[in-house]
Amino acid sequence: MSSSRGGLRLAACLLNISEARRKCVVENVAKAALLERNGQKLPEVSVLNIFSDQDYNRSVITIVAAVDKLGIAEKLVLCVPGCSVFLFGEADLPEKRSLVQRRKQLGWFSRRDPSSLEPDLGAAPTRRCGLTGVGASPYVMNCNVTIDSQDLAAGKGIATAIRGSSACGLKGVQAMAFPHEGKIEIACNVESFEDQEAGRLLEDSQYLTYSVLGNSFSYVAPHYIEAQVKKLASARGIGTAGRALVGFTPQECKDCAEYAIQASIGAFWKKRGGIFM
Image (cartoon, rainbow, N blue to C red):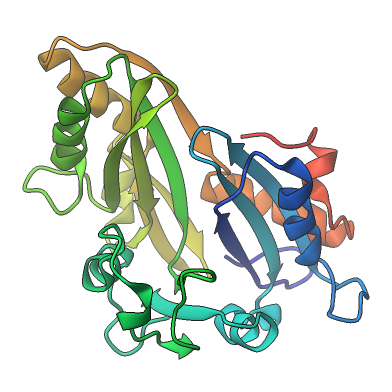
């Protein structure tokens, strides 16, 4: 994203870590994003949000920084002993394979021996350190819709139907179904896509559109995702139990980032009332 204030060019990093039940550990990871290795505070960097889900034992930390502060994959390999990285999206040049493609290629959910994998950067994977994915895209948002059922098969059917890869799916949406807090959650990655017909999309309540450096990008509106899940669940005799957005919409992220960077607020998530969704 770019900022109109002070000529800033900013990027957002959604850092996913497998820890949510120990708040101190999650916050220490967030604080580390604000510091140089010598302990000095990094300028033009802010942690906007921390979202932790104790049931999944997973946290998403939203970090924003000036574009020239990036280089995440290389810094991980240099600074974290044993770190292994695979690349996806715009970071995976020249193929630009999606996260879904890379996960399938690597057997992400198959519990295969990590030592048999070849990372794009870093050391050979080990069970202790695992494998870290680093990618780049215009913007990714998470929208999760809970169905009032414990029927995982029904949830998987709904997730399959709304995926962008399905014949009548939602463009830019990647979806999976998981048991969550006694129900089934349809967890969606909502990717932005560049579209030359932004004017037409603005008239369609299915999409929301924003601009970065004069280029128009669109994404499926969260309320439309919820409506489609509700429709598909209803056809199976199942109700829905709510929608959750993890982090920000693109415009919300831009607005918060501009404010936090201009005001030099590193721990912005604390100003917003602590750990929140």
